[in-house]
Length: 496
Image (cartoon, rainbow, N blue to C red):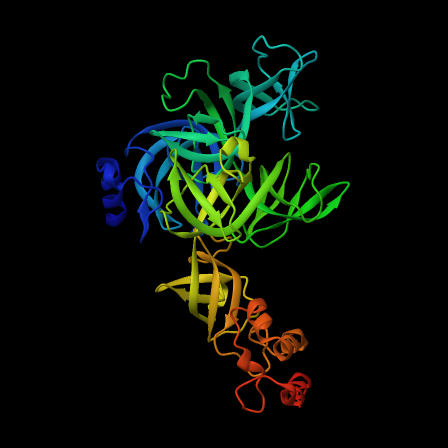
């Protein structure tokens, strides 16, 4: 109890400790001072160790609360007092609320239906009576927020309206611009947000709220939204692998993830096209599983280097020699080798030969040796530059082996592991077994093509398998691969 009280005192007096995400150890989240009265709309979310979080819409919090009967994702109105008790949640200390009341709530957009009593057909399909239509006409798209009370038998529940305004809805990437939290959309527009909840800069989100005419309180950009809600969205590049009358499937690149993602709208694109998809998403334990009401645009991904800064924008030259202007440079400097993804724009807008990339990511890369080992629930683990990473995309589960790997360092990993993810694009066992011609760590029929290529054209073998050692095909020990090695290779493949 004394340690929790000390944490609470520090939290309420020292702004330097007010951070949501620390780099090492447990950070401290700042909802406000101990003793503060809280009356706020927000949502319920889960946490480790069985705790329940309340995340207010006004950007305070989160708070640890007791809210029986509510599920993760439920919108609520909570009243209570901040107390000097700290709950550890995902390496963050969360102050608790002494809750006076938790009531179901609604905050979102929908269509007004002026029947005998005004109703709201919410975007999520639910129907509510509303205590007031606010003077809006039938069919108006509205943002409504209020406490939900049960309806009479046979009636829809009632929203006791606290806010009713024309609805503004947008999806994009959250950025920090001049001290403001800004949503960057696919058309390049920046929209200042009153509330970001627990979303972090760089994350893709959907927001719904009230567009303000007077944005003087947000001097960073010209457009702004208040009283807004925040929901997780998906934004990323991949290739369409399947298109059906009911939707399509996206194979995401190594930065986004590895599990296929269902995409509602394939646009006019074809199977095999590289696209950028953005929209509200549903998430599973290992990342996004589906995207609905999505935008879909030409996408790009590739390795290359930052070659300079022109007109305040970074220039990126990829391995094929194409040059692009980047909307975002990230933490990369001139000369750094990076992996870039984004929306592919035309050259006229960019003022360069091959176009511009917007809503782009810039990721650091790694090429070198990594000792890969069994990591139990985080398998496999590999050491890169002295740090442990969860390795994703190895061609085989060959552990306790040194690999030569090339790929992308990702800041987030769609797993429950505490280590960041490294996405492999090319890999080969440093010292492959004899017969392992594709250096994937195992000897199988998949090595036949590699052996034939090594036998007939050593230079072409080196080009096709740049991380492999051709000497793996030398079975008679003469230092080269020739026809006298064929019998030994066949025997190795068939297991004799």
